[in-house]
Structures are given as C-alpha cells and as structure tokens.
Length: 356
Image (cartoon, rainbow, N blue to C red):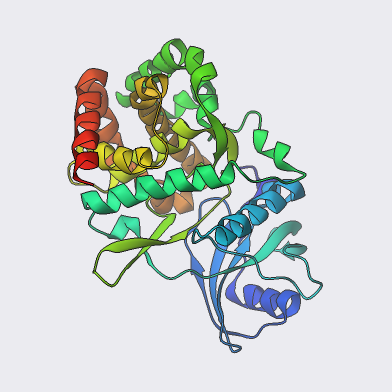
C-alpha cells in the first residue's frame, strides 16, 4: 500500500478523542487490536458498552458506497440470526464518519466506525474438532444463502473488478510471483495458477453465484462454549473482503484457513464440507474444482502476505501468520494431488453426514 494510501496509525489518545467527539461516549479502557490494512481498537466505555473502533485505511476510505454496503451487510446478517457486528450511530445519526486525522505524516481522511464488540475466542486458539469444523462449514453456507437474499441500492460495488483477493482473479497473482524469487514454492504456485486457468476458468458458468464474505478465516470466526460444552459460533468478523463471487469460493476459503491450525490438515476438508453440504449441496462441477480453488487460496494468502511485508516490514509478524505453516501445507497438498485429496475429503464428508 503506498504512503498516500496508508494504514492509519493513531495513538490511544487520538482514538479516545475520536470516540468522545464522534460518538459522545467516554472510554474507560482502550487498547489496540491486530489488523491487516486498517486499524482497530478495543473500547470499553464508562456508559457500560464494549466496542471495536475501526479506522479504515485511507484508500478504502475513499469508497463510501462499499463501506456502506459492508456495514449494511453486518446488520442484515445480525437481523437474520447470525452473530455479526453492528455499527453504532454517530452523534449525527450516521453509521460512519469520514475524519481528517494526522498520524504523523500529514492529515489524511479515514472512515471511522464504532462496531459492537462480540465475545468469544478466535478459532485459531481452539482445538479443531470435527464437530467444530462441521459448524464452521454449516455457518459459512448459511451466511452465503442469507447474503443471496440481500438487496441494497449500491450492491453493484461488490463486483470489485481487479480485486486481488477474489478467487475470480487468481490470474492476477502472476504479477506478484517475483516476491518468491529463489523460493522453490514459486514453481508450485506457478503450476497452481496454470491449473486454475486451464481447468477452472471454463467451469465458471456452472458455479452458483452469490455474495462472498471472502475471508472466512481462523481469526475472523469467534466461538463460545454452549451449555453442553460444545462450541458454537459467537461472531463473524471483518467484511472488508466482501465481493460478488460463488458459493464454491466461500467453501474453498473456509477449508484453506482451517487447515492452517490443524495438526493433520488433510482431515479438515471432510467435516467442513459435510457442514457446508448440510445447507447447500455442491453440484458435480463445483466438487471437481474444489481442490484447485483451495490451492489457489493458499497461493493468494501466501503470496500477497509476502508482498505486503515489502510495503509494511514492521507488521511482518502479523502479515506472515498464515505463511508459518501454510507454505508446507500448500506443498504437501500439491504433492498429494487432486485424486487423493478429493478421496480423503469426500469420503470423510460422506461418513460425517451419515452420522448426523
């Protein structure tokens, strides 16, 4: 991200001043939360509420309609029974405010929202039992089915032509391959991209369209234990990567990220797939492309993280979270091959579904 479209870098006193001035609340506690392109703060107020203050990076802050749709989506899911955050109105009754802030390199405009704080533990910190993975797959499918019913006057902004995180735009990764120069994984990535172009692109007419959350990962899903000590999803976070996509994209993304924290990653696909198909069964073409799309998401995540580190080296530890384990998983999955991987996933999914 270029300097003029930078990630915000407010200190805690600036964040506190924003909360007081824009939302008329009195922070009693404020602390930074990890983030990728934006800046987030946990805020507890003297009035008794808990919130997340979200300051968008200056580039995304320019797209008012996109942020409006993302904010509306969270409310729509919340009203439909899924645990998404909602935005608190500003003193003037709006759900967002464009603020001019100096983070140390001159004033820039950043879009600011105060979102409800959802309790729970991120999936990344929990043992990924088959039941928990099943719930993740089921919830991801429910979310996309609900989003498919949503209407909004600016919904067209989700087309996001050229959006590098969309699984419709895997070919764009070729422009970033140079950051892997000297790494043997670069050849695997080239092969995956080529396989996408030759075996997936032609199948898109048979994929079912929908709106994707686009980043259903182990840090964006919160869970809490229920009365039976099983875990239920208590929060779905971060709608910044929403785009017009396909059901199969969301499933591929969910499987890929859940593999990162699992001691035996190949075991993830079956239960996630079973949970997904309990809500939205795949057609044969979608099933045939799932393996390659999961590999593609690995390539997106690993390659774009390396690229981001070249722009923001100080944030390397957070940016490279996926890479620490993901590099090996991608290589292993590629070497295992499509046939063996699909056999493991689809047999496991069938067995899991039979037990339900």
